[in-house]
Length: 453
Image (cartoon, rainbow, N blue to C red):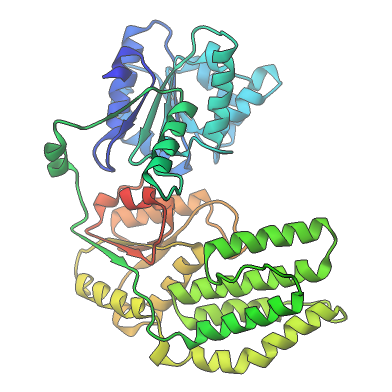
């Protein structure tokens, strides 16, 4: 394999097939064959630091010095000491990036002088402004300036993705770009033993994709009518009409930014409110009408500048529609059919004394929280011990989880104190889904990386 010969390469294997074990094997051979070799194992999620240290890399601790450090640990200043004193350092990519750009001698490290092998976990994230890409940009600058002794690069992924490309050519282009960013000329995947691999990769026993839509959606239709009214009030030609989509959200956020830069208050305020209605449409599409209604209700109950004519118009428009929206939200005839389907699946698999373990993947934090709230108010499902697992990044919609909270939920799930998680894709990368016997992808028109994992 190219990696064992010291060549830069990407290992592409399905989740559960042992990518990290491959990395451990490469690290062992690398350190055994090189005097003074030093390995940085980079991850993009804090919980993976502990997972890799305790599971796969534990096997090397008898022969080599292995240390780990994450964004949650306080000894970032000691990172340089850890690098000097250990053979393998497992860390979040940001910690290495901070040390590379540090101008202080006691907190600075060098890619070329300090490391002989970089292992990049979930390496499909090496693009655009991602931290992995910033590290690799520095690497490529060293290479182009003629520096010798560059570290070897080993990327690990279950799917390089397509970057959202709609065509085969676009997908190829994206994968080639990832290879270029990682300075790799070879992707290693299983060819001859594919069937043997499939038989050994643990799979959840049942996987469901729930994506059906309502036959009638008067609640959503009314939200769209209000959005048309607001756009007419804005008096701006060429505004998008693809309400209730991620693309609409992107365009409205751009409009809001431009309006703020040009001090155009009317457009900025209307765009902010349209974004909230779009959020409500996305929630309505995914979970209950009442969740969508509450999202708007909370937004409009906040203090407003009542003297501003735009705010007056927007508040009055919501008030005119409030009663009928609330009535529709409570009408069971128009409830989301996915919820009935999900209830059936959970009832089938989670008997009160059963041992089932499952994950329901959904698009946003908001929908993960809404699904938990739905489960807790559904009489037939109250025996299920469920929790939410979402990302640690900041969100304006719902409170983010701290990394300690994430760890706690994962631990309780592993030990069986919890038997169901409502999760965003934070858990898709690196969490051992094979510990589940049921996986539901709830309304995910998501990126193909999540579909692979």
